[in-house]
Image 1 (cartoon, rainbow, N blue to C red):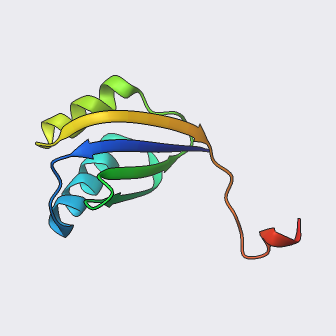
Image 2 (image 1 turned 135 degrees about the horizontal axis):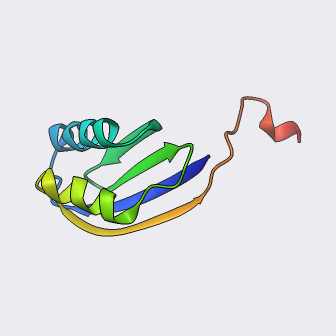
Length: 84
């Protein structure tokens, strides 16, 4: 699993967040996506790393400005993960 943080400029409200989430879900196979207009980012959890050129095209086709993207391995933390 991979966690990808996409920095996006131009989102202004909850509808912008929803619009970005839908665009990402429609273009990529993702487990989870959440966007925040206050943090100016979308966080995507997926099985495989996302292609930066495709992400940039999706963001800009949606009407927002792609700023940057970073990926890191993601490990799901369960309810009892603190016991490890």
